[in-house]
Image 1 (cartoon, rainbow, N blue to C red):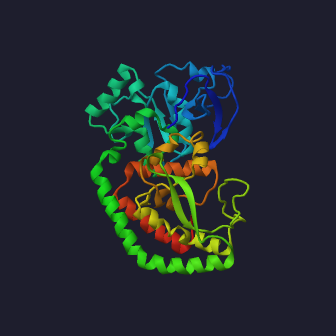
Image 2: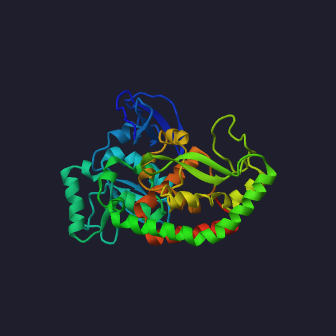
Image 3: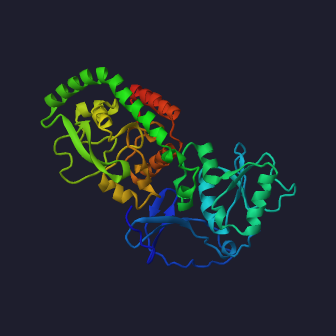
Length: 378
């Protein structure tokens, strides 16, 4: 990943999932206690323009001056389990925003539990390494009483089915448990074996469908039947992805841009093969060559990655695994062609990278068949 400058940082306001760029001062402007307490996230960028982290600044004197014993609660949703969370007070605004956005009840930093321990409660920590000694001892005491304590990111993954990327930080990647699957070499061999087996299984169906598709593409519009385009793959190495051409020959004469749902550059045949994903069949060649896997994050173009990594935390981490013909984001999230959609797809991609397994791949492949049959997604 490119070198990140830490000086002269530019801070941008982030409201909901949209990031509004406006330069502000490093120091937080104090407000009177009568003003409404807000906790808006700020995405921080280095001088080089690459993403550094997400920081949530406390925007009122009342909140910023709160002592360590202050308790934050939110119990708006009757059907939602309450998460008991322990974190340094500098992270409170971030957590409040994320939890309320995901409609989750919470109690943050309640160190005065009368029963001495949180029996049958979901207890989480976030950036626990930055807690004070006595605060760490409180959490250790919970463990001693038999309370299950887990990281907040992991607890949210279990509840939501995706990774809340705004909570990611460097400590998350240092955790041996978080991405141990990437260090297990024995996982790669069976995955590669399954990829080759699936290609052989699909070949008798894909080849005749491919010839018919090529025939209709050639009849409808001039140009090559196959379309090759550079994409970024494993460990940021580029390769040429192969697809059946679904757009006009001059589709990008004005420059690279995302394909939209009702893109006027798409031909009539192209609309059909994109809806049924027949246009992806030539990527079985990429799988055989070892450039792609059957399941994984979809490969993206470098020109878009350079933009997205400025907006999305740790976006290039998706290249820690081979890209896939299909993926969790493709079967769980509807069609999208914007930065906001890319953020949501990245949440599912990060979840997949961390939790990838044989059975998860089977589940994704089964959902892909359903998606193809009913013409959903892309």
